[in-house]
Length: 324
Image 1: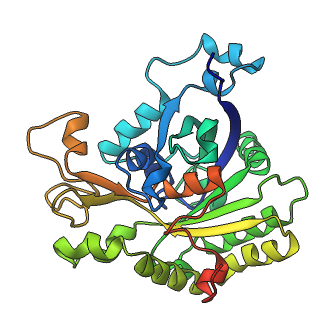
Image 2: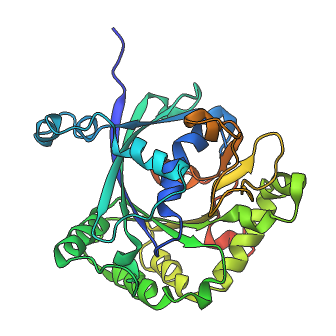
């Protein structure tokens, strides 16, 4: 009789300003794992599958509460469809939950017999840094999201990779991060800072873009510069000193990624807004998957779930020039 794998549950909360790319990162992470577009050793062989809330809650009284109302089209499939169509920010009043099963298939890995069931909460950027142009979340919505933040096992902070220090969201987000670090009821010990839109740095490199982007030394330089321009992130440095079991890792992510075979950043100049390349006249999932290679968007989730760094996830010690 086959031994049933152990199950570990993990709750992750996304935090960041409006338009930082949180939902895009989330929408592309399954494809990033599927295409092995991450910095972990190939021997790890992870698979990531979207599951229902009922499966995440299996074996608990909460599971039956979701059975009758489970959608035939999952929220995650809907999110992926919206991303393929051009993307839409998470509504101001909402914090949406998505559920996944992470399995490690590497034969030599001790975690190969463990199933990781993951809940990811994607909250509107207006929770972290209210926008004047957007609808202010209600008190009830804020209270719910605050509970998600405090109860999360890991927090992924998503920041746009462009002059962070000059961005209007900095004061609000810095204040929230400081409060979160000081909160006694905070559960999270793992923090992953993901600098989004990494591909935009390589738009002038043409077919050489991916060669440069997938060099960990280049990514380390990019992250180091980004952190130097955002001194308010030092609250996470101080947290590691005050709480020895706390850990911060920093990385870069690219939801739009690069064009398969052609290697250039995946921005279609013939489409309005931010659109990936696709063949004219082709519709459906194949239209967007044919050329698209997302890059590193699985990194924050794998790092949070496995408590393991990759070639593209860096500690503060590494940024400072140490081995760490």
